[in-house]
Image (cartoon, rainbow, N blue to C red; front, side):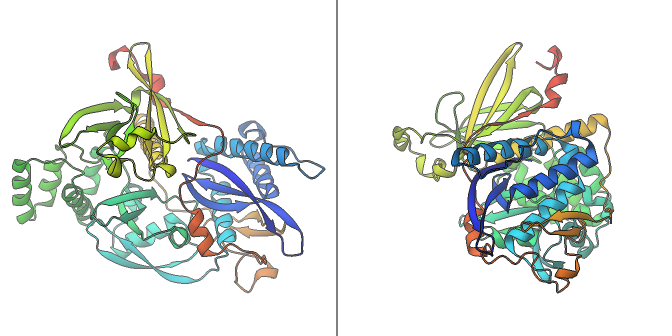
Length: 476
């Protein structure tokens, strides 16, 4: 999970005094605004649960008001702290952190608890209306979605909810995979622009397809996604392939259709928008796809594919996300593809990874894309799946801990929440309204401006690749 605190802001506390709010972005998108004392309380809970030795150092308290320089120093230290927490699987999946982030999102948006209809789409654009609470977390909404289509919750570990947008051209752009620390309803309400929540499979290894094909409903979902990926060109087909697939489709031979598609190029890959790379030369226009334990790079020429590069995830020593300080060179406008490939360069981030080209030879490769953080998240999930297969597949549980934990609000008061019901449980808030009552709350309009990619002020978050450690000479 990619955390950042790119900037702070001064907010009115409601009684004439002000406080500093730290704006937390997760996977490149604004999530919430919290105070230092809230993060300090979170740190204390994590230390109590996991022990001080398992938690990174937390910036100390100060007795006197902070100067501008000290405030910036604290922002940087808090960002470093939460980034380290975000790279620890044990901490980031804990109910303490999940409950904190859910509650902070609700407090920031000033969202009251109520039941609403939430539209969920499957890959053939079929729309379902799911009755959910505005504060339901992602796994709760996913569970309700599977129940709506009568799919056993035994399959919940194979599916996820994704936030996507459809371009005017009909192309689909995956914005992000929704995580359990957020409410799909609140996230969708705050994200700028037209978007949809879509149900898609969430694994990379096509061997897991066999499990889905045992159930008729899961089989149908997999079939519809395969159909859609072929239609939008994410899976490469020849004229002969198309003809055979159409025959299988006419026979409603769903299993055979999927098994044939599994042999085609880029089956099970996630495709990203056009971007540029510094390999094999500067400002190379590329099409990135991730899947099958690799990052695939197609170098785009004026008309047809020029060259293809394959980078195995097992040979990436590490990767990191950065924000380029400089604009693209001015002569990039001379490129005939600049309008389609290099549009919106201001919002583009950089994904850099060290790749083992040959024995004892590492090469740094940098990709510039407004989907760079999503690429990083996909690489991490590929690594997680590889480690999971190595250590044994653990079934995802839909049971939740009913215990309640304290959440410190911005005004210093507490409420007790569980990740099942991120909701107030105190006498002072028994009216069921918003969990804060600040005179200057965030509005949805303001949040829409924040829920977008952001440039980071400083630092680099380096993600070490643990499957790289086991690479040997036979893998080269």
